[in-house]
Image (cartoon, rainbow, N blue to C red):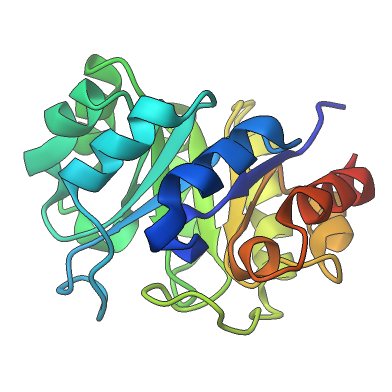
Length: 219
């Protein structure tokens, strides 16, 4: 069994000390950086745009897992590729032609991800699961950090794992929102491969230790 991945969410970092927090993740047991890009339209919040992402990319020594919570994401696929993103995740709910968007992401040399809001059924991905490298299941409503975990997520993970197995796909399952040491093990046991942890890591007294402890729980 492959090791589960921890991807600290930079949205929860201290923006006044961003380089320090990026270097902390570089030195930690985390495997990826999770970057949330929000436009204030698709979700009721604005995070950061290209200049900040460029600054993060300059210091990051691990893959950038970039999650677009924006309308019409196709406009920016090339831009995110040029900025060095390894995985680019778009929302199912924001894509009129999902298959075309996934192909465009791959054509630009990135892994293609699809995110699902809490109310969106995983069954909608059945026909394109072999074209998806990663499915990000939102375990909170997207837009703000620090929200409580939605318990129905475990069921969705199991359902998605069945679809992946049935179609002989190699898609990874990522969980984004409310991940802590209380639910991490259960999520991985249900079938999750990647855990995004934001507030739980950055609001702890010792983020490096928190990441290390989380790694021990799931691996």
